[in-house]
Length: 468
Image 1 (cartoon, rainbow, N blue to C red):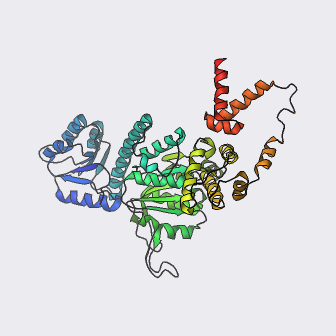
Image 2 (image 1 turned 30 degrees about the vertical axis):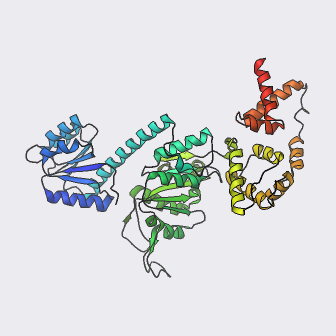
Image 3 (image 1 turned 120 degrees about the vertical axis):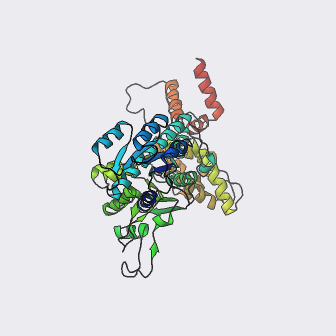
């Protein structure tokens, strides 16, 4: 069983009974299990030398070395350690003095248990976020990917996509929510899968599409129910959040969640606990939440259809996957990949496309993104009969207009008709070349296809221009 948090919490008090009680309370109320007890204040400095502990829960009235003296020594030698004083005496002077010496919080043993637990949980969250922010900053500065194999299912050579990978890798081990946005078909679920693999979590990746789930179904699906919770509930059923224990729960299409369900999800994220239907006993979870949507959550929040507090809670870590039209250089690579994949599945042998098909694909905007491209390729291979796919066959399989219609549609508006004076032919050519290179993001092969000329011809034209 993995310990939580990832760093240790050292509890120091000369009363073993109090330490046992505190340990049990932290585990039952907050799932905190990475704790150690010390009843001899003389051993504290040596234990902190290991670097294992980031939080110190310290009593003041102890034999050998008093807590206030120990506090000063700890903050001097181990300034990175967060010290929370839990004293048996309720003295304002002591609290003020401890805060001056560097304590981050002060509690009395007679305080409500939930107040003490809340203080420890807040300290854990702050340290975790600071650690994650350092890791993210380091990762983004390096612009490197330590585990590229985790992204093997996402085919790309584009720098924008590599930036998405780098960020995902940096936040993968975080306990906090991760929001993935992007148009339909961009690969949000594949990125969530990569984040789960990189997290090192021993549990499963559990996926649910929440679009169309009413509040009752959402609660039953996520949280499960007790026997007798409602008519037909003859047995206990685990919810998906329990199935994702020690793992990741991926909530797809989170933007379509009802307002009532948003309240339940917010509580889960804030408190780390939930209730099965028919039960008033809270259950804790350590599953990491990843959410995805194609919707503009900020706009939905302004319209009042998405809770602001939930939006910002989900957006603790956030990445947007660019649409395929913003990394068109990947189109040829993806086309080749899907061709090989489809041919292998359908046992057709190697399939090739006519040049007209390749030229069309390189300039098409793909409103359905990678999913649309894959569907086009699979449909074309299915009717190929093992032969080369002509433009006519391809467009028929894809349910698009034939190439001549598309070409005619592109030219139906004469761009020169409204001009007072016409540009020279060489000027028009330069404009066309520049626009093709812009759309192809500098890729000469793609730009040449857009212009209907060979890549060597385009290269020669660009070279002649640079020599002038």
